[in-house]
Image (cartoon, helix red, strand yellow):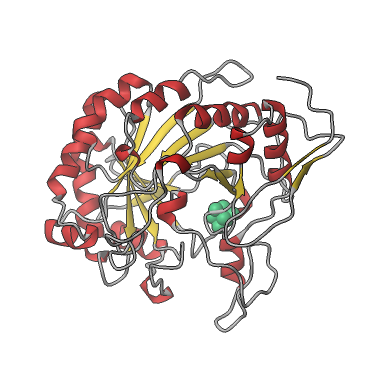
Length: 388
Ligand code: SF4
């Protein structure tokens, strides 16, 4: 890397609305070393969305009436190449990132995803350790791909699954995809050694809450309790899913329902910034988790950045604008320039959307992610674009 202590003004383009250009100042943010944002939060996790396409049409993520046959996905030329993603991942690792999660859309739809995983697996932290490499998938292609993913260097997978009832599942994915194929994918991932596997269930009151207990029963007994089932509160990500607070099933209700059949004991968090609160079955049947981003926001610990498929850096799942790194990647910026720009962006971060949502009373004006009242706050980015 070349020395970055020179003055360069690098335009950071945005979606949603304009921001001023980001400058890499004379006393540049060092291109390596840990970063803290304005609320003292480190940058440890990077989520990379590798495609904006998905083969499911779940109503809370890619509803069919919006993502129809006329929907304009990103053109191939707009997508970051694997080499561009790997270059950025290496610069993020120099700034303290230890974990990379590949997301989408559905990441297994990206052609030769194993090639990207192989490149990311080569990255080392400043201490010489490999990164933790994981991926979130709808499971539809997992049975076919699990062994190759493992061979490429992937360590774990998280599978999204909202119901075990075939009719409910087919209705929720809205493309008539059978649940048996996802369960076969989980089996294949376990057999390939992509564990411990997590299964994420978004609970929507009135839609799939009756599936909480069947899911708990199934994953307690299958695979010897080694699959960790996690229940996620239905969130207001994006602008197309018609989110309503009365459709949110609070995690406390989920825990009470499960504990009525299987006594639970709380577990300590394993890592700082862990999103899930963990519970163990008292009889030793494994553990579950709840992710309560609506009723118990965890922004104070949020150490995650998100990179979109086309190279925009988002600092919050509920952001409306991203910092476009692609012009830097495709221009003349050095590694130091880009790393310095990343540092500058993270050090300016004050996002805490879920905490602010919790403070708002119905009828309050909308606020941006920093708490400024703003009735005309720009439209939030969609989950299928930014990854979950
Ligand atoms: S709302 Fe934003 S800042 Fe808060 S936990 Fe979620 S992604 Fe992090």
